[in-house]
Amino acid sequence: MPASERQPNRLMTEAATLSERAALLVEQDILAGHLAPGSRLGIIDLVQRYEIGATPLREGLSRLMSRGLIVGIGQRGFRVADISREDLLDITTMRTAVEIEAIRLAIVNGDDAWEAGILSALHQMRRHIERTGDEFREGAEDFDRLHKGFHTALLAACGSKRLLAAHSDLYDQAYRYRRVMMRSVDSGKKFVRAHQLLADRIIARDIPGSQAMLTSHLRSTMDFVYPPGNES
Image 1 (cartoon, rainbow, N blue to C red):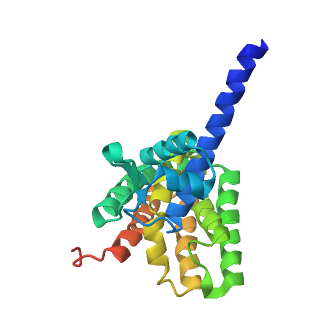
Image 2: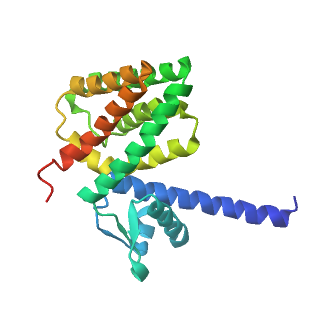
């Protein structure tokens, strides 16, 4: 390939990498609560905050718009998406639709390695909670990775990259709400037990039972953050 063709390709790759990094940094600050719901995202402020150019920052913010973490405000730029009962209900409805189909496919297609992956992910999460006692929380990097890893392992054998990508995005979109719920979790044993029961039902290849239990599990965040009868 002529050098004149290689140079533009290299620059395009570098630009993509910068925009991906910008999206990741902003996403991390939104999920951690450093950028509050509804807060305005000024390009100049973000350039200084992350030391990334304005163009890749705008591209990174556009990526996050497609994932529902930020919204555009016309010619005025961007702001962090608000949190609300309606938003969590929408996330939960979509996540349930995606995951009950993904779990059905995973149970149909999953092999021994898939089952072992679930048990390994559960074991790692349990051991982390045993080491940290009842102080484990969403927002701790190790716990976040292990918790999401467990839920991803359940669906890993579904055979659909798009279902898994949708699960990952929706899981992250629910993160801000899940952090609220997790503040009240005072028993690591109960937390592990709930995930153990879910894993057992799925490994038993009980499709209707697994789908019902998974639906209830996903709904638990909604029921806690916005209890029925207290929806104002």
